[in-house]
Length: 321
Image (cartoon, rainbow, N blue to C red; front, side, top):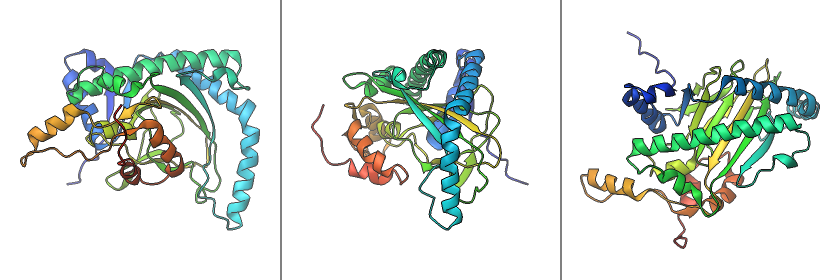
């Protein structure tokens, strides 16, 4: 008898308000501990807003970014076909909108006023959803409500921004990835991805697993900082984007991260619980204490490498905040 395929974790958030809450919370717990990813349905962001974000984002690429990408694509393919190494580039067109602590939307020259306003509205909804999710994670972990939001706050609140990407069709999938494998450095990531064009994969038990495109869903994944705060109970996982021969995949990834001066360390309540469970007595603090900005300074140089050496490098002592 064949072993049934384990399905990708999907959470219907309406169930969190019903007698099925326990089962939905268990899906979230299992996803955070064993997948690093899950998908949200009925998350409260209107489908009309999401459709407008998608329409404007795809039009913006066509009108403002496609020509520049086509030149990059031509040069990359020519180099690859001549035998040059092009595995250190990503087949994507991208721009970044910072929301917190200070928005840079007004500084992005090729966004029209309507697109700016719609992205602002969408970011506000995503921010609220991120904070709701953090409290659900607190509940699952047995931490006091608000602990994770406070842990991210630093002196000026969290950092929050959105990476808007297009992954255009690629005729030579053997030459280049859409986005090379990596873990995300920050806290919790909420992704609005194309529901027609696949490509996002995560690494689970040594195998690459597709993150299925689902219309109007929000994909959530765990960043390195939540792995540290949970002392490894939750896992950030390697993920990548494959190139496709057809279709232009849209990706709108919003990163709810700690403030630059936030001090990140395993939650003492979780360490105490580990001590109680450990038969030998004495929980083990396997993750370091560090300032988030210091971690980011290392991450930008090592994004496409394993996370474990970064954690190890952060174990040099810092002054307590």
